[in-house]
Image 1 (tube, rainbow, N blue to C red):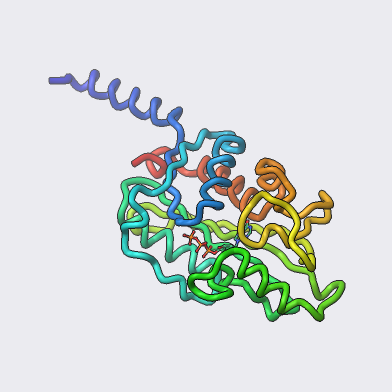
Image 2 (cartoon, helix red, strand yellow; image 1 turned 30 degrees about the horizontal axis):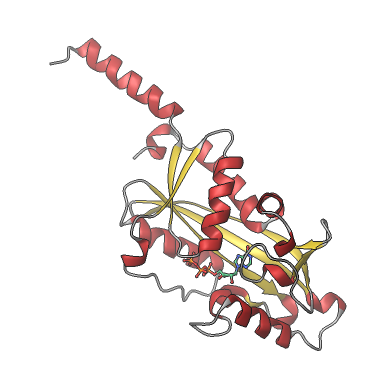
Amino acid sequence: MFDKNTAGEVAGHKLAAEKHAPDKLFLASSNCGKLREYRSLAETFSSPRRIALELLPEIDRLPAFAENAPTFAENAAGKALHYSRFAEGLVFADDSGLVVPALGKAPGVHSARYAGENASDADRVRKLLEELREKKGAARQGYFVCVIALARRGKILGVISDRAGGTILDAPRGEYGFGYDPVFFFPMLGKTFAEQSLSEKNQHSHRGKAFRKLCDFLSSLSPETRVI
Ligand code: ITT
């Protein structure tokens, strides 16, 4: 049995330990490209607090979330809420995509399914280039959007977003990245996202910028909110 003082000390030590423990975050995603980027981001950019990032266990066996909303924010929030019911602790989801204003904001929220349900990255890129075949100059401008939603046991704690602007080339370039990266030319570095190393892309990308905001947001939460 603890006396009152000992119990108080134990609680104090526990809180102090939790203060210094990394924030454990579960990523709810079936996209390997996103997972690779978030793993690297969590290792590199988690200052001022460390982040221990893990893929949500058994995500592929859980009931899927249907991303049918008209905005990235609604889809990200819905996904995070849905999957947070299957885990103890903090769960985040990302809804992201490429927006081309000259195509009426397509592929946009439909980026993953732009060329049909079972299409590959190469199919999606092919379709995008086909739609842009007659477009020149400013009409080939586009931007990636990333919305991250953070949830805990069926409650949204925050929704954060950022974007990265560039132009769409008329042929793929580069071996890295995923999705539309080989045709997304980022003028500041003079390369496509697929010609950039993981750390270069993470420094400038929609996902990298949104993740750094997420880290700041996490540090602003009280220790009681952060821990399981
Ligand atoms: P989860 O929902 O399981 O996370 P998903 O691939 O279905 O995986 P989204 O609904 O957010 O994810 O769709 C994002 C699509 O947008 C993705 O499949 C790519 O085609 C594209 N995309 C998003 N971020 C990208 C990036 O950094 N580089 C290239 N393409 C990207």
